[in-house]
Length: 422
Image (cartoon, rainbow, N blue to C red):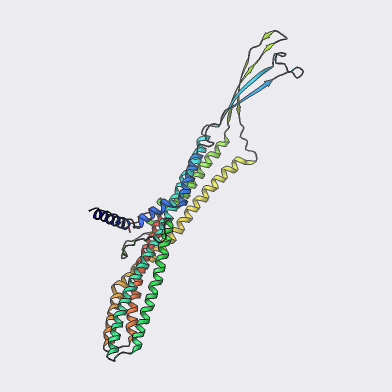
């Protein structure tokens, strides 16, 4: 009973591991894992923490200054009791910036946290794009391997036909050799495709920081959908959601806040000081003189020698214009990219329809007819091999069209920063 129980538990654990591995192979889960372990994202998280702490630096009142001084000490005796004006001065002063200056500075620094968040979002977006391209390319290679193996099976059937005809003297040995050579070529192609698939899988595992041989499951390739993507709509989505564009707008907003901060320099800062002077017993007069209390208020005079403040204000204005133009330039580039991708999608959609509805059925019929004609000696053996090769080429091309479509959609998701429906 103990042995049976042990075997049952081991089987359950094994099956549980297999099932859990199958349930964690979706692209979304792989991207999520890649984002979690990415070292650069972790470094940006640290950069975000630095930006948060930096907000408090230099945006609060400066510390008050306490000084101790000696006043009117006679140089001939250095006595504190010789002269009535001799005393010990205790000073406490506080600098007070113009109202709103510290707040303006804090608002500028707070923008850095928002900018770093967009940097993190943009990196996540890039990881999702790169993982998607590798994932769909791996999917394509595996489908091509399956199709090529099917081609080997067809060639083996052709080989059987050629051998039967050779046995009855209606085919030459050359036909058998030709089909065996073709089978070898196709098998060599399978090995090359396996190498490509392993390369794609190793690159994905590198993003996941795990062993390159870890298996990544890919689902069956889906047909191309008929969803229409409008360029104007894509541009609006990108302006709202693309972290890169949002970051540019935040830089522009930061420049606006920097202008407000600099403009505060046109106004004076204040300094308030309190002085308490301690006086000792005077030996000359025989009196105890009272202590002194003094109050000092200072105001800076913002002359801005050499146009210093004006130059800083102009700099922030030019920065606003720079980031504004950069934003519009990015939208222009995106518009070109969206137009190119939409044209490619339309091409892929038309070609898929032509291949799946017309060319593939015709090629299969041509192969069946060629095989039948070869069996009755109507056509040469080369035509049968060509007909079989045409089937493989069209099925492979069809798989490439469909994975190319999913890669184009992944590009749209990257460029818009949005989760499109496909």
